[in-house]
Amino acid sequence: MIGTIPTLDRFFPDTTSDGLFRSRRSFVEVQKSADAVVISTMNSDAVVLLETVNFAADKHRNQRRKDPDGTPYINHPIGVARILANEGGITDINVLQAALLHDTVEDTDTSPAELEAKFGPTVARIVQEVTDDKSLSKQERKRQQVEHAPHCSREAKLVKLADKLYNLRDLNRCTPVGWTPQRVQEYFVWACEVVKGLKGTNPTLEEKLGELFTQRGVHL
Image (cartoon, rainbow, N blue to C red; front, side):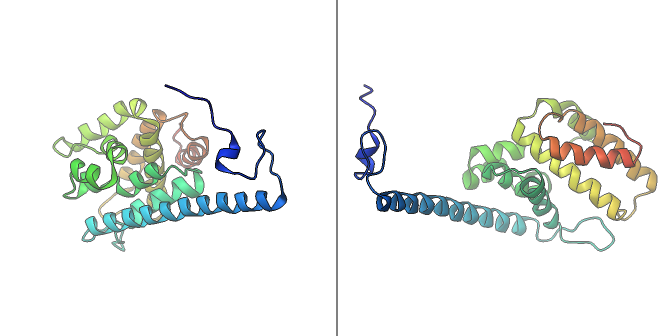
């Protein structure tokens, strides 16, 4: 049974029944309590993200990117999460975690069940949405990415946008070992087709991707 809604004075005795504070001291004390809750939440999120980074770093510890310098692979998921937070304005902890973990199932021995047990069903579901089926041919995986993009959840679309933005910037920075200029251009064309299915998710990231495509003569 739903009872009467408690007034503010039940929780804060120094307030009147209409929610006004009886003294400035009362207001200051409540403000301090609210600030403490915010700080506690921020600290909690920081701990969660650090744990997630540590997990991803361990899983990718023996992997390298395909650039000539062979940079540590963990740079990529960290960069994807950073794009979401710093450029996309994303604060959803589940999305940021999924960004850090987005290649663990596809490229390491991590299982969806392991992710769910450690990070919860939401993070595991987002990662699963952005994971390619490695049993399929590369061409089929690329085709499915284009086909499935419009049907992904908003969280998965955000990770995909940031992932593509990171990879395209990386391709402009340096050509992967063994790649020809034609293969790089083909990647841009394919990535554009994927991003078309993600439009309407985050205008800022989409604008930045559009600029990269335009530089390559590809139109989003």
